[in-house]
Amino acid sequence: MGDIGSVRKTCLAVATIVLAGSLAGGETLALDVVKRSSGSGAATTFGAPWYVADALGFFEKEGIKFEEVQVKGDANSMRALIAKEVLIGGVGPTTMFSALAEGAKVKVVVSSQPVVDYNIVAKKGIAKSLADIKTASFASAGPKDITTEIPKMVFKKHNVDPAGLNFIQVGSHAARLQSVIAGRVQATMVNTLTATQGKLAGEVDILATVAKDFPGLGYTYLAVREEDLTDAKTRKMIRGFVKGTILGARFVQENPDKAAEIMAKLLKDVDVKLIAAVFRQLNEDGVWGVDGGVEPHITDFTVKVQMEMGDLKQPLTVPQVLDRSVVEDVLKEIGPYKKKSS
Image (cartoon, rainbow, N blue to C red; front, side):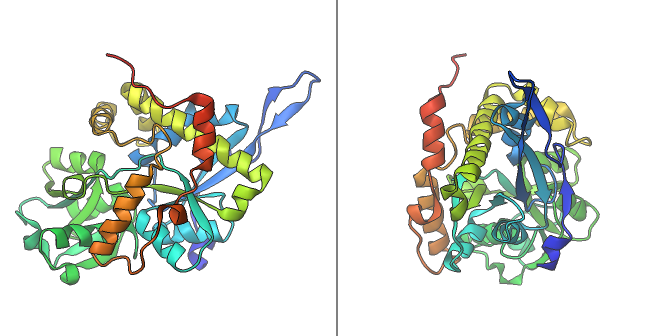
């Protein structure tokens, strides 16, 4: 647990309880701080719904204040959740499934981006196919992380044995891309925004797009401890986060340019026009959790894929992974997503 004790915290909001809203009697309402761990190491596009929700006050309206805790890799994000250092843990399916197999009492309650938009990239000119990098040094965020396990699945899908890959822990999407550009590793897997940056700069070649090999494969999970779903206070905080995240996802879907402006404040070295272009592409791909992102078929498919690839030894049922009760409660209030007519 030493890694957790030394995590670097990135506060997207004030890290202490703040005051908001005057009550009729002149009193103030204290906002409950909701901490969410992330194994990505830095802000990235899959978090756009909650960054938007934070910036536009969606969370504040639900009586919560959002704080992001950045750690290295999904395994550490799950450890932070189990250790009660955060209320919500952001993890990928592989880490979630492993935790459940080991007996962790956790459930997925929402997803900002339920479907992957990963790409495997290699340093410009060194490879034309995955077979050319089957013994490459490969940057990932951490062991047993989706950035380690999904590449193995893609290699197997292309009939290339991934056993020769040398995975090196680097960190965030941007850090992994830079490690390829600098020659510290030969390849990595990053999201659409980061892959596009590298390609436009003439620094990398895109060798595989995960969504083409595994359409509908699960991506981000936001998990909570089961005990916090039964406690009235923490369940209310979780509900506020879920509602804000759904509203944020809908905003990104309908307002990609405005969402890009918000995201650009976090990704200061990325051109806002590029972020907007990527958001428009992701919108077309329908990746956002506009209705909560915990549709059973995504988890069911992801479990089956991992079973077929040998990455999951024991099958899991959808109810073992998901608790849709919070999302369903929120949707009763705000209704299902209806795309605006153009």
